[in-house]
Image 1 (spheres, rainbow, N blue to C red):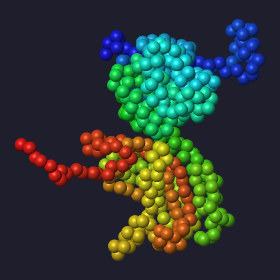
Image 2 (image 1 turned 45 degrees about the horizontal axis):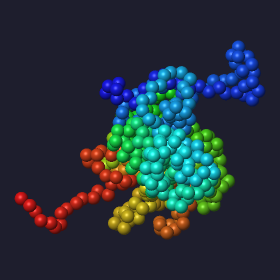
Image 3 (image 1 turned 90 degrees about the vertical axis):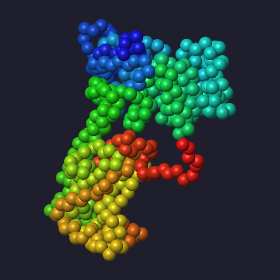
Image 4 (image 1 turned 120 degrees about the horizontal axis):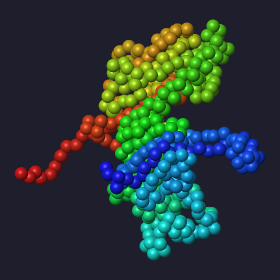
Length: 453
């Protein structure tokens, strides 16, 4: 692409804040005029370079505190950079803190006119746009009521409706739509797609991997104010998800080690000395009687290699390792798989398999098996073809016990471990071209109709 198509060019951008330990240090700093330093430097961003051409869309990824919002404030002109240079061509609409400039005593309509004027629209342009702003905002009779009566979601509706009337050259979105309801978010996303189709350049900050895949062509990943990687959205998302998974692994590893080290393996715990007398405990992200403790949950591919990325349709193997502290012969090993919104996509336990086997006059594999105290065990739970849709998933691992092999029987939680493991799923669009959270493997057949030569 030529430089004429350039919308944004940033070179070695940096933003430094001065942190003062005490309020009077600010006064001392001004009095000494730089001869002494009474503050500490905090670099929210450092050495960030990027280019965005007209019609391109860029995703900005990173954990909380990575510098994403600071970068957007620099690009939108809200903050001046401490170092580096920034070139922005065209009209910018920044959906950062929507409604923050509204006058609470003004009505929604009056604030819309005020906001539009600040953004550079004429009275005639606002008059023409007002019916669409009112329709899009969808706040009904409240549009002519003072904004101080609005909920935060209603305020965002009006502010967004005004911003998108700009038909901007560059649209900057910083998860400002999270407070809107599902219908409003749907309208916003459709409007963003329309603007992109009309040639608007998009910078989109979100923790939602699907949003990045849906809206952006390329992405950058920030960590602690520095640029980690840049490239096409898919490859950057892979790095981002891997980074999250590695951090979660380290956290869980240290957490589990701390918990295991606190358990005296040589002595019977008072609450777990009896098979039937154990009392459940809650400890952080786990709970149970702790008669057995899950030590590791690993995602593997069909070759037995550890992985955090699964393609829809490929095998999915989950290996659960645990240590038994009290003899158990009614132990059930199970799991829950949740998506990033916390929705339970699937739950299953070994008792379901054993009941099915016994109904076919086969021997149960787990029910009735004696799990001996002091021994380590490893169980593989697998499926030949993962049918989950693209997304980020959490595995909860569960050990329970029952008095009988009856699914209606109440159960005792031996160990329930939240966030036991994480994995991501991506689709092969040639083989598994579908939307949603699972592949129903649907097929179509023509049942009637007139054939033509």
